[in-house]
Length: 336
Ligand code: DAH
Image 1 (cartoon, rainbow, N blue to C red):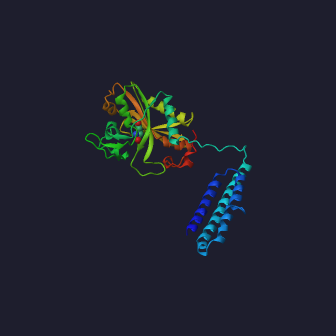
Image 2: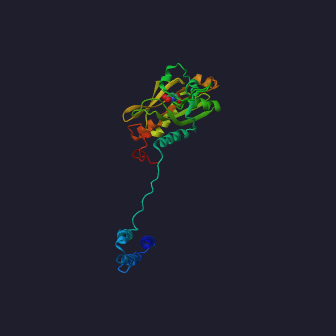
Image 3: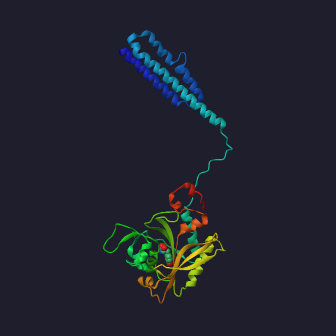
């Protein structure tokens, strides 16, 4: 039995040294040396095989299958390394150094970012600063200070996602528009004020091709002494020409928003139809008094634009939900 054990040990050792050696081979010629050393007629495997004729039948029953297994293992090892080598060789033979390299793919800015930058740039060129605000707002700023009291039917227009953060003084929500920044900016600054506020807004409503529950707005606010309605018109007309082209026509019509008086919407003539792109108006005296401004001293205008809607017109996008679907086939079409 002692003899059997030591033969088995030899088989084990041979397998180990053969596989260690072949893995360390680097040259094609080494592989042939390896084959001769282990699988050749006078190689290690055949000399181990010679034991078979000197051992008892009982031992043969144990050792025989092990030797066969070893032979198969060594042959497999050889074949697999031979295959690898020939593939490497083929690759080296066919390598064409004149082939152009593969492009490294760059990301692009999101279409919403692009249109927000474009619109903000248009206002910046007219002296507006850019400011951002929080997406979590209080009821006071989102509604009350904008002349939208609790029982006002206009609150229906701003279906609200309320947050579970109520404390004694405030009810919190995800802002339904960027207009709350009007009051925040007026409270912290003295006129003259000219500012645009891009940012994300949320509404608790069903989505369809023209409505998303998560979308962007760009709020605008200009406050100074003697600001008139014609300045509102001139500024927004100029913005439309910068974004859509110098011959762009616009139309203003009366509209109602509780925080402006008078209120308007502005449409652009686009492919033969008038399409509304923003709401605007002269800042309501109640909004001015709410933040401590004297409406007899200061006046101003405000506006709110939906940048995704503007991008949809410019880029012929049919469904607003594309902006949040995260589909690269859509996103990669916008090159900055
Ligand atoms: N906040 C309004 C909305 O979400 C848009 C708006 C209209 C903003 C008129 C304004 C404005 O500043 O003057 O529908």
